[in-house]
Length: 201
Image 1 (cartoon, rainbow, N blue to C red):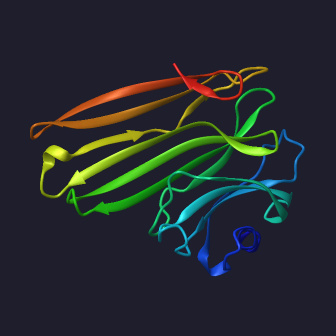
Image 2 (cartoon, rainbow, N blue to C red; image 1 turned 90 degrees about the vertical axis):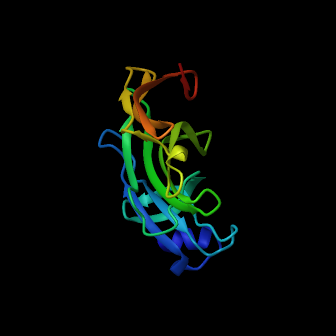
Image 3 (cartoon, helix red, strand yellow; image 1 turned 180 degrees about the horizontal axis):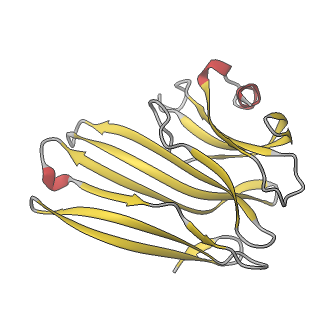
């Protein structure tokens, strides 16, 4: 997988990190698999980039990359919270479920920012496309607690339809500051299937 990724990105294998792998569901008659990889060779402004790769061939011994999709969140340090799994959206639809985390220090604001990403991706017309995604951000300031805010979301809850996908619901705990006092809430966000992707209600 690392060798294939290095060839696809015209990079060096030492700059590729394998973050997670997953196989199709038992009900699928497919030998393919998928991988989350990180490319960290300094070409994109020094920031690493993460990709979801859909692979063809035997699991854990793929022959080629069939499709790829760049992720909007990518860990810069030691990979943390990276997950990849295959999930059923309906009786005849499946998707790759991705989770990634990243962290960075904002010197201007004097604090640390972390981002957690959940996404669902599937092949459509030969390409990997995003069906649903949510990025939650938390900021903690060392100097001014009034700047602190956070959103932490649980895993997406998928309601699978019989013929078509039904809905995805995610529950998020939020915290904002009212002066120096935290204001907490639990919010629920539901998205319903609309043709070829989920749209938030």
